[in-house]
Image (cartoon, rainbow, N blue to C red; front, side):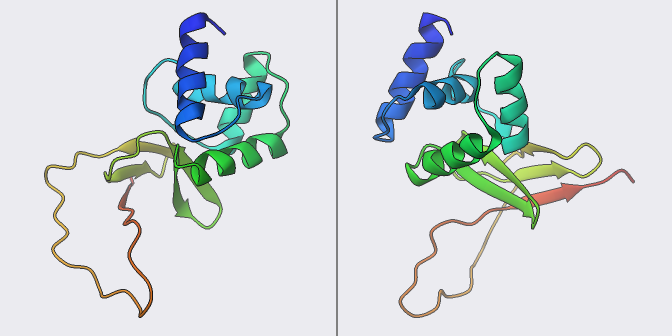
Amino acid sequence: MNITTERHSTEWLARGGLRPTRQRLALAGLLVGDGMDRHVTAEGLFAAAAQAGDKVSLATVYNTLRAFCEAGLLHEVVVDGSRSYFDTRLDDHPHFYWEDSHALTDAPTEDLVISALPAAPEGMTVSRVDVVIRLKRA
């Protein structure tokens, strides 16, 4: 890990109040070390870590992604019951899910209009609205 990647990763973990363990630093470096936003699956991040020579188990990747979400560093985007993506971009924005390649990408926000939401049940507030637009070849 180069010094810039390590600095980005350490600062990112500090924003979430997380201790910079070896595994967290390695995974954070892959997620945000270059300053670019990305969407990853746990399996994809596990493969990237292995390719980079970082020894972390798949269970550690899942647990670490969950910790990053709980710390407010990532958003989990569920596209179906068996596939979740973890998004480093934290502002509200829609996504395209490409059914043929199983990729998740940011969609433009300027044409999206949500004019109303149903009232939340008593004692609850809406914490987030995820918009996933599924795409398939015509």
